[in-house]
Image 1 (cartoon, rainbow, N blue to C red):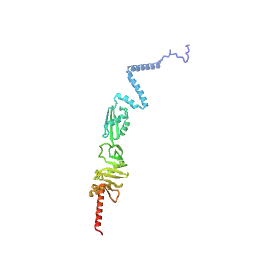
Image 2: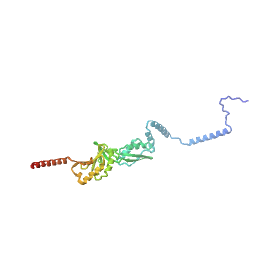
Image 3: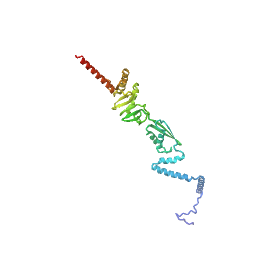
Image 4: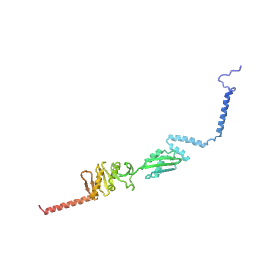
Length: 304
């Protein structure tokens, strides 16, 4: 009787695979040997590549946690040719390309992968002249920038400050150059936001518009026109364009605006009031005084 082996003792001397189990084991061993030969034939990665990957991954994690993702992306993308090398700008006339480039680089990215196009667009649209912008990446190293600029409509004077505004009354830049002198001058509080509608309507009086040097908003209710010869036309709150047309008709018939007057007041519907210049008033007063003097002399020489 063969000896009984104790349960739990590891004795593998007689545990060799037999039959179907032995065949499966041999197949597995042959496959493992084949995998080993393939792995030996593959080139091992260089230490520098492994170091770059490990260190880059560590830096990316650390700097991302610290808010420095853009710098990390730039550091990884620039050596492989993704640096921003060319920026093509279209649509800019009042905004210099240098200012546009400085604004884009001011976003903080030096490479295309690192550039946040939405942040670049918002930075461009914050510039004084730019109404809208688009930024497109063209790999490996080109940016296409297209801008739409605000259109200057008038020069707005408030106190001593002069500002170029667009049609909606939005301030663009201070007026401080000899450019844009052909723009209409609108003066006073509220003139910036109401000028467009009034100037559109004054087009209906083409003979008067070229003579206007300033459109003055009065009390946020009505307009005065300052003409090129110094005459002020005071328009009513209602039917202002009809009143302006009436001034043109009187000028055609009587040469009203060529006379020595300071203002024409059209605010009353039943009458027109004309204010003389100080010189004209002095001459008129002297003439009236002379007439009164002659009348008195005549009366003394011819007693009743």
